[in-house]
Length: 283
Ligand code: PAF
Image (cartoon, rainbow, N blue to C red; front, side, top):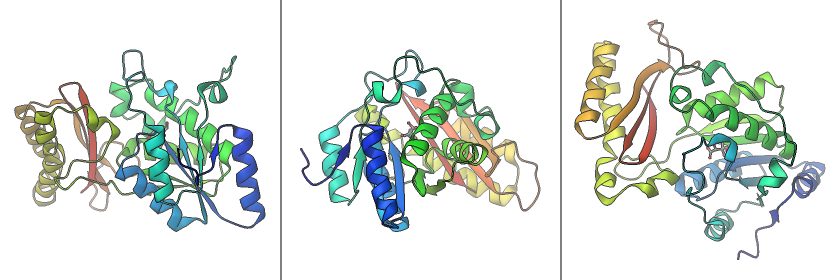
């Protein structure tokens, strides 16, 4: 058990601690997580530490963003390990609410999101997901009342959705995106990588490699459909089951307009065995 790192199990305790910091004119950043922390999450903590004087990390495996049959019950959990890692990365407070604290008896509200949450990417394959994320993130932002909240670019559609939602609901917290952290072979860090078999772990980096090659080809040829078709074929051949490989406007996530100054983002989701991987890069 980590002794140094204070924990807030309730919204009241979280608010008291943050209010004290804000009274002392300290800037506060929040890093929302579902635990099972890896270097990707810890880089978000570093990012938050660089932005603010105090960093709060929330750890809550949010049932509202899992559909029936998804991995809610088996989602990796390691609170002791997480606390030790957060201590060593100089987080100042860990918010660890129970399910009952977040969704008490009679809870009857959800945040419905459209815009970047309704563009037929993740939303097409996980229709429940962004309502669950937007609801819990809205709650966390309101509960913590922080100056900043840091999210990884790895979940790019989530980052765009949360940014839109905070702006639309006039939530004063500034949403900040932080770069994807990768293993040496290019695989984006993710808690779900733990599900990969040894063989699948060897194949998995091909997702990022394919996106890189596709971005390169797109820059040269500009022929979006041909490049995407080739990418899907390469992944299928390497035994991925492809949900999508798409090139989208990097801000709205809508289909490309084809103008020369448009920011382009390549986004992909594909499964290896029972593990679903997502990744994205700027072109
Ligand atoms: O990205 C995640 O880990 C989760 O979707 C988040 C943002 C913590 C909400 O539960």
